[in-house]
Image (cartoon, rainbow, N blue to C red; front, top):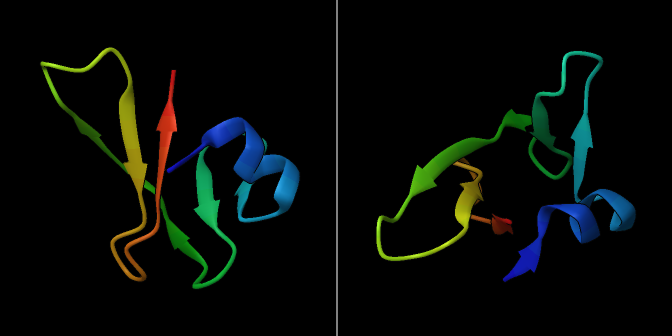
Length: 55
């Protein structure tokens, strides 16, 4: 699982002017999932299932 920062550099995710993330593969808005046992949050695309962690 890559980080959101590396996904932005690689072009997997785009950020709009309001800071929202969009998956470039399927042009779907990225959702957030929080795990209380982890330090990071998981950003995921509900359409294609790609996941990125945000520290």
